[in-house]
Length: 100
Image 1: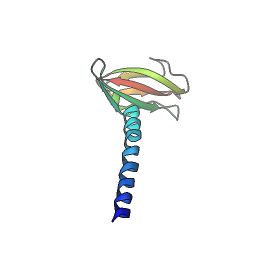
Image 2: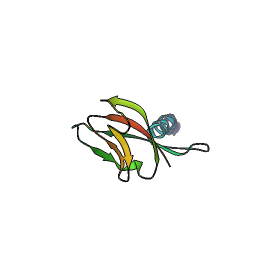
Image 3: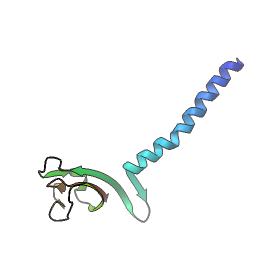
Image 4: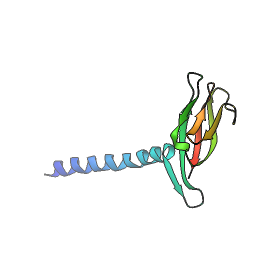
């Protein structure tokens, strides 16, 4: 009986120890709710084949480039926002902040 309780307690401690790490990872790459900033989401969008591609998350939102990963990402030339969302072109690969 005592051994069974110790095993159950150990499992609970392990599960509770893992929960904050999972929550932090989801928050970093998912949506974040902040009183001053509104609803913020980080989106990765790429033009790996040097053609224009769209990421729909940018529809009806304010968008800014936060991290350029590869290629030259120049607003209005190799990335921008239109009615279809965030567009990237000519090898631009980047993370964008999307605010609603």
